[in-house]
Length: 430
Ligand SMILES: Cc1cc2nc3c(=O)[nH]c(=O)nc-3n(C[C@H](O)[C@H](O)[C@H](O)COP(=O)(O)OP(=O)(O)OC[C@H]3O[C@@H](n4cnc5c(N)ncnc54)[C@H](O)[C@@H]3O)c2cc1C
Image 1 (cartoon, rainbow, N blue to C red):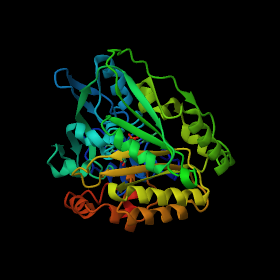
Image 2 (spheres, rainbow, N blue to C red):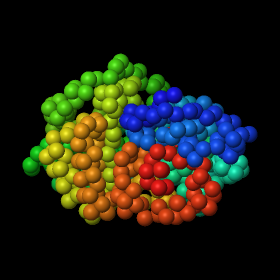
Image 3 (cartoon, rainbow, N blue to C red):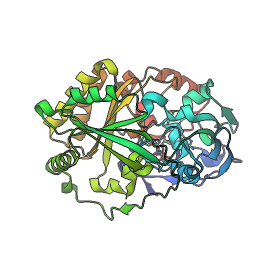
Image 4 (tube, protein in one colour):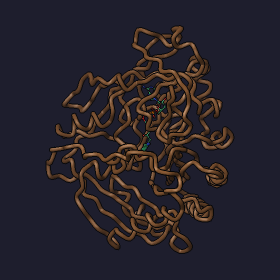
């Protein structure tokens, strides 16, 4: 059977392996060193791809909820959207949410995802009280913060066992609406100043025009916000439109991206503007379009997301944005975020600084450009996000993740390295 993840590159032949808890991983059905859990396929690259994969989406029961503490126990295949639909009307929301709600709880833990509030709230693992994991020897272990299994699994890209269920802590909110402020900046210096000025706001994200040149490099629309206190909990998920077919590959070229970026930037009000928006508009704008990944054509696309420590962020971003402009390869989506301190997990992506995420269609010479950007990222002490990655070299990866040896040793000790592997883990020797 052909399968792939969100970037639709690569597409591989693979066999689904269904399991229930009574089947252990070293059951003959699981015999293979190329086996990986698969959530909802919203990772962009090859972290959820292997010749045998374990579909988790059908493990989707919510098991208990404590109205006092906000603790929800649910299976790993539950989607964040299902949690939102069930709990926003009761006044609860996720502590941490990425820019799509169409991911599973297992996928959120395995990538240790982050949202617009990393600078104040950290990664998804901050909201995990405990979880149960099926290991290759057939045992099921419960782990929590402080346990090595927990710190290897959060951000461990499915390589430390199958997350069966988790006890998540939700947060009380006062509405399903957000007071959003949009700040339009004219260059990278202004963008950085605006991030710092609005850092007290719990949620912030900037859209950068990554084709702007000269003095305008780094101009952006910075969106910040927080929940309103109007007590409105009448949540209805936004209707979605569908991209019906793969766009021809010429649709996206540097000219069309430039036009889009110009229009998008011009349309926004000058200076500072405010409006009240729903959670879907604020947190999940891309979810409004089903299959938006088709606009990149049938060869697929990749997202290049890197993070740089704060001290070198300004110079590093300047260099990277210049290299992209010079290459003529455009990106519709160039999202800049501010991050707080790193956590203790072996392979979690965030560190204190700024990250930029850029989408590129797969085309000739793209990987040459990304190799060039890797060098700048490495020079400034940054790293690449595994859940978006499909091509980074082992050498670049290792430079960015100093705890990789501890992760490898843990996998070996637990007998995980001979059972669970993805195309990504094989490429990176994890
Ligand atoms: C539009 C969009 C916006 C996004 N925005 C953000 C963002 O703001 N921040 C961010 O951090 N990420 C973001 N992402 C990435 C996304 O949140 C992650 O890739 C997430 O891990 C996808 O979850 P999934 O359920 O689709 O898992 P998959 O893509 O299927 O798998 C991802 C990883 O999780 C592992 N996995 C899945 N289920 C289990 C399980 N039960 N046990 C063990 N391992 C498991 C897989 O093996 C794989 O390594 C975005 C993605 C999209 C498409």
